[in-house]
Amino acid sequence: MSRFKIVAKTFAGLEHILATEIKALGGESVTVERRAVSFFGDQEMMYKANFHLRTALKILKPIAEFDVENRDDLYDHAKKIPWDKYLALGKSFALDSTVQSEMFLNTMYASLKVKDAIVDKFREQTGKRPSVDPENPDVRINVYLMGNRCILSLDSSGESLHKRGYRVGQGDAPLNEVLAAGMILLTGWHGERDFIDPMCGSGTLLIEAALIAKGIPPGMYRTSFGFETWPDFNEDLFADICNGDYEKESSCKIIGSDISIKDVAIARANIKSASLTKVIDLDVQDFLTLTPPSAPGIVITNPPYGERMKPHSIIELYAAIGDNLKNKFAGYEAWIISSSMDGLKSVGLKPAKKIDLFNGALACSYRCYELFQGSHKEAVIIKKKLV
Image (cartoon, rainbow, N blue to C red; front, side, top):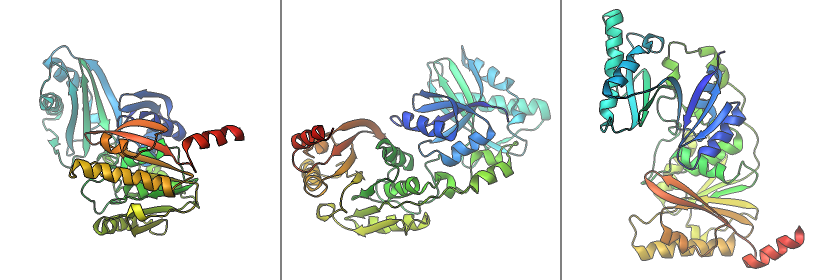
């Protein structure tokens, strides 16, 4: 099979985790970019990337790259592409554009130029044109225009890869599945210790943790990928990937709870949909009364950020979280993500690590707290004696 360039899109802060995933999968010439990782592979690698990568949002196959000096240049270059290789008559297409260019202040206008080029090319060659379907197209085309540099790519994923396919319900502020997987992998956890999310909401962190611990690919629940409607789709090759024996044994406990009866019911439905009911222990419980299994273990959680809470309430909540971690979770590692800096300051623990992430449009800090018996100073002394 011929090799070609592939680009995997992700969230800011997850690029290096995604690069590690790609290397483990067999990607070559892996290069970290801004909110993306580029690499080289063949058709099988592209299929595997969609099926296996936990921290990728989209897998793109670039088909043309060129400079544009004016608006007409975009149309002219796009029209030179042999679109009949990628799009058959009778099939529909849609365009998704990312534009930061003084030439195209309106992103839709750049999309329109490429759309016109595709349609005019088919009209001139066949007298007919493919249809545009922005909702459910057969082929999605990505337009990336930065300054005067343009890259046109085929979107091999279709719907964003964060849409795993297991979610049947969600709470008020569900965590994106790709972000959840990235948060877990950033900690270095792969199922070696017990995992707890004591404010689990609709259960996304729990499910992603279970998939990691059990080795289950995130694409296992998807009903379709964009490349399945491409003219060169290899059904047998993809079937071999889908039917691989991936699941492994895991002895760690994965425990979730939430104070909200409604959220736990939603989480339970999502966990059932993912066929992970026997893997995840779930209960209605206030984090402040939770007693964990004996150490070692890891806590990863996404508490309320305070958008609908009074300032003093968020400070009290985070202070109580910190107290409970100190009092009951000795020997654990705790990771908390939040956009509330006042809340995080109120935890009252010194973070061992801080990572900048985004939860949607919200800039967040993802913080690690190492929980020791006694004071941090005493723990450091003990560590030094053991070395």
